[in-house]
Length: 173
Image 1 (cartoon, rainbow, N blue to C red):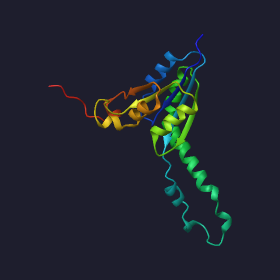
Image 2: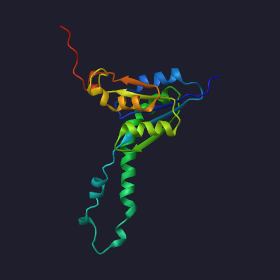
Image 3: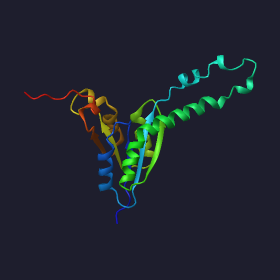
């Protein structure tokens, strides 16, 4: 019996769920350890501005809650994160693969993915390929930076339709 493989699936919400779940089901055994994550940049200054002083009294300090901004940030992180990971989690559940979920706040998605992979001792990272890999611009992408800097195997799953990858279709003459 082989030990469980620890896989980190990093998504922004465009990673095609079916192919990822199919690949995971072929790779992992009964002791699968799959974590699905997304990195969210939380606009804290915007969320704090939603608490404008027009709605509360300047004389009532009891309504000012220092934890309110952090609570809003966590709610934002949860809401945005759910939208990104739920399709992958549902596809994994259909393959009878349980998964952990992580929502990571960060400004640099590549670094957050690498750090999460290290924290969970992942043995592989699965990500979406949103650009053709053999262009100069692609090597500055998040997926390329994870490939270069993580020293883990990285599986790039292309979008299922050309619209998913925001590329121009190739026209053959």
